[in-house]
Length: 143
Ligand code: CA2
Image (tube, rainbow, N blue to C red; front, side, top):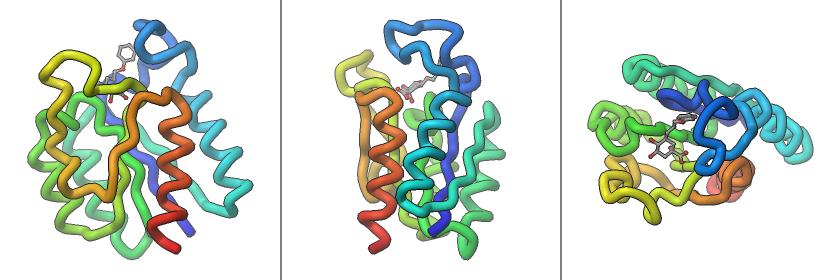
């Protein structure tokens, strides 16, 4: 199985600021932990980040026929992007929404996800483990 991990805006800054919210790991550290678990599960992983909404939309569109599942931390676009919602809906590849922080325990504008309704499920609040749980959820939804 092949799983596409997508990371949205500012996640490239992880480990440099706001460690009390997002922890001290960099995105590269997170990718390493995902790859370790993926190896155990015999899953192939592609791990990408962009600050540009259109990149994320393009990658979701291209996932059809190449990846069996998508794990997405759309970051701030979670709360704003109709385009990402429509792309996930259009391609029909099972998609898991993840967040490092518990978005429901934070500011009200983070409580609403525009992509949740087109995702198979949402995992949030577990730091790097949200990524690992997202990967495991892909195995669950595709078996
Ligand atoms: O908790 C998450 O994973 C979020 O998706 C992170 C987003 C935020 O907008 C979502 O509401 C929840 C923010 C990612 C920005 O990450 C930073 C990392 C270091 C310093 C500043 C921002």
